Image (cartoon, rainbow, N blue to C red; front, side, top):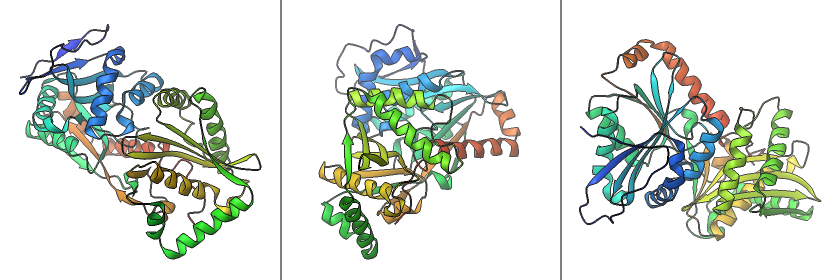
Length: 402
């Protein structure tokens, strides 16, 4: 049995000794978001080393918690080798309608990717330790692990370990949870050559027409005032979706606060990438991206519903963002969740995200949760559908798909 060292509200002080070869692993449970004050540095270092996503950074977790953490309890497990963080299971727990205590990954449903994060060279022992410690933790009945990328071996091994310990594991691949990625190896000309000939011709024609009208793509610098950039983007995005009779990505209570705090943290770290396409001083399209690791993440987009729609300004702005990502040396442009046709048009490929539900085999509330049967399945389907509506997947996609 693994005993979790519980860290007080005052924060974490990692062991001071450097990890010698073959150093033993120690696991700690953090029960308050205040632990991020000291944990953020090691947390983000681990995320980068593991090749995880921007959605798993400490900045994302903190902004999400401050906006949506009401009624939930912080429950983060960290594994240390000496003074180095080598494993992270970032959860919070909440009560379901059935009364079950459910752990869920921090950041969802706003996050397009999730899961546990582990140093690659210590994957096997760290994942096993996390699974064993969590299985012995009596504070949960159900684990809800959505948006696990197909290529995130660590999280798939983690749930397999929980199943081997006796937990009931179910797996699903919601159709709307596919993320679309564009590989960027090579040059801009090489990328264009990979598009369908008619598509390439149509896109370049529209781009030239916009340029002749005086349209400009502006990579805005809001490092000193990120709130101004987010507020302007929210205004255009909300206007677009209201004209469609829909609410858009910022209607959820706390959503604007979340993005304001996230943008401020991302701008401070050089991760925020806000774009505008303007023509004669009027914004025609906008994009809200993040740069992290080897990827650019196209999180949200918007376009003016009464503007130059027949020139597809949203789509052309996405094309120019792809070019900038290639020129900046990134390996992937990730268009995230949702199966909008324009993503395939731009050469993106679908990668499924898995959703795992882990039910503890020795908790009476867990069995009651399972006994709900069809009602439980209905609630889970509603949650999965809600995750797509609030994410970057379909919130302000380019307008005509070329």
